[in-house]
Image (cartoon, rainbow, N blue to C red):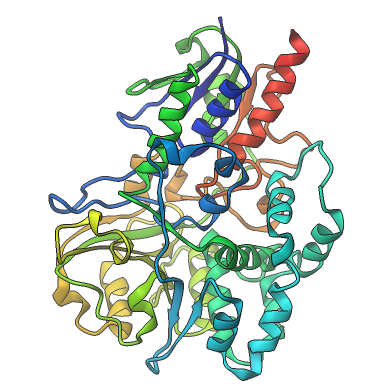
Length: 470
């Protein structure tokens, strides 16, 4: 009998498997798709030689992840590549604000009226970043915070809505960039804890950047898989699990799935009927004949580029996607251009690029024209560079990854109390009412992103249970 079976080979499932295998437990992973990866895969979606990341591509939380940093993933092929600028946010007047590794450079891009306010916001936390992030990403847990004073100070600034925090800024350049940071979790700006979301993304950039993985996000999943194999674990692909009886006998079953899929497979009935799924995205992967022709200089060297003229535009787009059934006419865009720093992603002289705008859960329209109109505003002539495009709306995203219910790439709405208390209010969110069944997906704290910490936290709960049984 195995000690633990993991269902789903996304970053959290693989991380949970590694953490258990490192502690001497026998582990096997079962994945329905033909390759591992979940939200961290790389595929030729458009033309031969163009390597695209169907979901996540830039990894500020991955490079900062306490779980990943504790593993020798570099020995298994994972190499982080840092673009000259982590992120840029262009404006219609041809200028741009930036999120730089340097706090001073970032603050200066906001203008003199807000430079000091930004520095006062982030600089006190940077010396404590590693401990703060571990505390922030490990909660709720039974262990106490390592630095409760700094965590409490962070909570005072970050628990209120981001709209409150943005009152510190006098001009909209800083507000727009910060609003864009919050939008990475597809959360309306007026939700609780959204101030903390924006601060985490900003501090992550200042601490270790917003890198891409050389060769594509698949490199993260492949490194985790290779490490797990060396630890004695096994991975089985093309293995769809419909019920617990489909799996080999084990002392624990750990699911890197949506809560509703877990309930269906494990026979837990309506255990998660109150769990909410959030807005989706409409994503386009591009093969380009050259770099994106940004008007502003700063986006030309940035790994990630946010497209939203102002904070009110971003708020309106998020509101439309999250609280109505209509896609925004002028979507806020998150774009990533990996080949700025990784030429292995495309043939010589060519580029890969992706962009997505937010849409309602399950939306079945086509946002291509609206997305490209936005891009043309800030990069005139963009359409002339397009060699091929691959589009994916909510339906296609859900088909790519069953965890994206209705196209929700966060595996559950990251808004309201559900941003903190996932999948439901509990001091033990990874456990279920079945004593041998656990949940480790992004539906558990600390939530969405390629960082493995949900898997790490769940594995901790599992190994404590297994050791009590010995």
